[in-house]
Image (cartoon, rainbow, N blue to C red; front, side, top):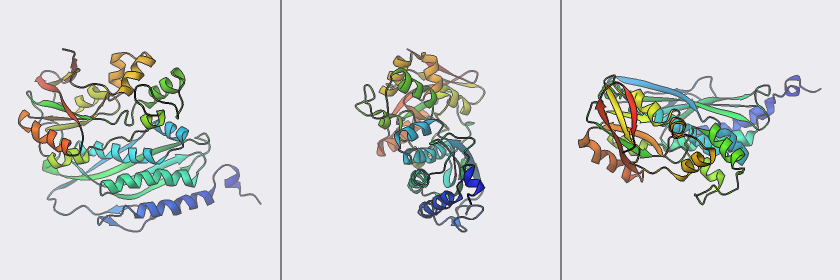
Length: 341
């Protein structure tokens, strides 16, 4: 007799196979802070020793419609790594060290190979940050997702000494803004980018992306850069950090400004990577919208005193991350402005 659950689209045997394969990947991320059994109802990690007043920093995010590019290309591990790096950056801006991640994969029809590939990328990202993949959820939801589609999200847990946490309250007029180079789109703006690339330009995954010498898949699936190795060695020096995600430079820098400060961005301090120039021209996207939707080549911004610029940029240079002085803080009402010179 046909099982009723399978008949309506949920296959428990596929779920068990996916869980078995995922468990092996999870085991590869176990750190000395990990506690409890793999596959338990909850994941457990110890708070690292040496903190007087440890504060847990938590964040949840996803990779948006970049997953549709991954599905179209049949390449699934890179978006798993994207998820980790995006989440790491979100707590890095508070000065936190990542200690654990939980993932969530939802799909219409669970394919163990796809799920294992996604988690392989997540596990790779976790190992790179000495972080435990403490658990997660794989949901088969045929009434919500079309065949071949899935969504991916994660929740990260980090820790920081209470007195060392970054809130933006140390930012003051006279500080400068240091921009860290992105690896492309990272994980934002893909709904617009896909429309321009696949519909307006008529390109597909294997075609060459204009002005890059790379394929569409290589450009659109470039992994969201983690700034942990560039920033952590000098984490005590910035007065604030901003991860440049949805909302662009202005929408994220404003989140770390005190009420009496404005940031002025020098729009000519760096050159946009080709992907953004192509999207703007082919899509006839206004400059204002480009600035709101995309990172434009700057994935993280540090706000710091001028005396700390050399140490901050040198730390990034040691791990081959390019930086630029992209602006300054002035007295004013909380806002971010662009100066064209």
